[in-house]
Length: 261
Image (cartoon, rainbow, N blue to C red):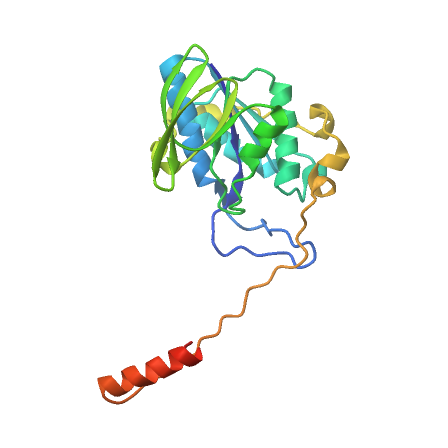
C-alpha cells in the first residue's frame, strides 16, 4: 500500500507574534515542531505499513526550515519525504494550501491512502484535508479514531461523532483525517535519527509541481487577514448584601430587568 502523509511545521508556543504589516506569523526566533495531530497521522501510516506493507511518502509545504519536520518523519521510519517550498506559496489560506499540496501529491502519483491530522494548532480550521481530497477527486473520512481493517482495496474505519462512533467502509484511493485517540506516536529510533541527519530533502517549487501562480499563495487565497487584534476583556461585578431572602429578592428583580452581568 502506498501511503502519503501531509504534515505541517507549526510554532511550538501559544505566544505567537503577528507582523502588523503583513498580518502573518513571525516565525523568526520561535521554535517549531510538527503539528501534534500530524504526529498521529505519521504513526498510523507507519503502523499500517507494518501490517500490510508498502511505502510511506511525507509531504509538507513551508519555508526551507520545514525540512527539519521532514527529517523527524524520516527518523520515525517513513520512506520518502518532499518539501514544497517557494515564495509563491507564501500567504496561502486553506484553499491555496490544499491546491499546492494536491499538486505535490499528483507529482508523487502513486497512492492508495492519504492521512492528515484532523487540524493544525495554529489555524484550527480542519479544512485542508477535505479540500485536498476534493481537489484530487477522492472520498474523505474525517475524525478517524481507528483503522479496523484493510483488505483488497477496502478499508474499514471507526469514526468519532458527537454521540459515539460510526463504522464506515470505503474504497481506496481515500483520504482520512485522524484524531489523537487513534494511537500513541513513537519516539524516533537512534538508527532513524542518524539516517535523517544524512538524508537529502527533495525540494519542489511551483514550476516543479506545475502549480498555477494565480491559485497558489496569497494570489490564490480568497480569504485574507485584514486585521488581527486581541479583543478587549472587561469584567464587572456587583455584590448583593443582606439576608438570604433579601438577596434573592434583589437578584430576581435584576433578572427581570435584565441587569445581571
